[in-house]
Length: 387
Ligand code: SF4
Image (cartoon, rainbow, N blue to C red; front, top):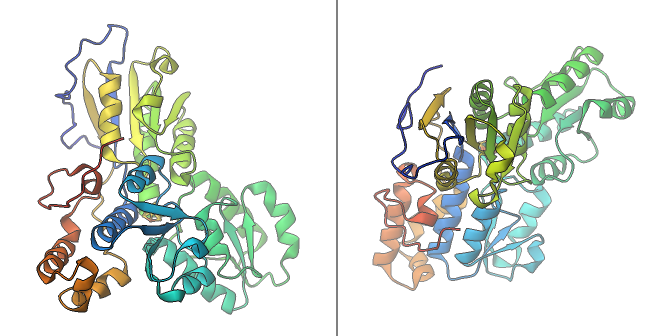
């Protein structure tokens, strides 16, 4: 492990106040943290839809599991629904990054709706594996959380052949339902804590030596990397602050990873206002990270509030350069923008071309700019109060 980045060993310029002598001495900042490639893709895509289409733009389920991101999109005119029947015919509709049941994806396109499925490609991969294994007659153990959007979407791929396993204890009830021990597969929700997945896999493999699993496990790189960085932080910290929402699976997994690394004070907060400094006790070294759907500006605000006397040290584990291009429906729309598609932006071909150009620089764009107008070289045109 090495230290790097603008935080390494430095003191934040924003820390200008005189913290109390007994306050936080140092912040250890996990790298990587915050927005993953899938969340970046989904947020930029929804931001793009807000810009192109007349409001309201609809979104099935929370675009990502972060209260502040959802609130900010609401202020940009997005209407979130839990039932596609609430979306009028012809309206633009985004499906969330967690993935949707295949039946719902098919129905959503009815009535002339313009549907953009912002499912993360890594979730799509698990859907695909479920479909293929089910077609080959496998019974599929699916390790995930009941009621989570991603789990519900994946289980719907083969409801008759998939068995949800939330914890090791569930195996006792599930295994007797398996009739062909030579055809058992195991898949998992992408955002679990490592220990949730590994122990169940080991038990299932002991029972079924021919157990099929994906060649690489189904935990996504972003989940794995954020947990690794936080474990490195937590091993050196008196307390850890995890920024993210309570319904965010990868955020909760981060809190578990920090406790698993031996840190006794682990606080999960949605935003800096929820951070009670008293809850840190006498902690001198405080670790900070953010779940995959938590905006980076919240990290800065939390650090401002902690006001570490000796500054911020980045704890670097690995680089992430993954990039997921915009959803296919949007990519296919772009070539139309100069022509018929210009109608979508008020019949202005020049405006349409400008939006097409914005789209072509998507790789370099920062999802945070959708809300904050940070200088990314792109004029997003969005104005919304941070909150
Ligand atoms: Fe995709 Fe992983 Fe991000 Fe989930 S956490 S959206 S699976 S990259």
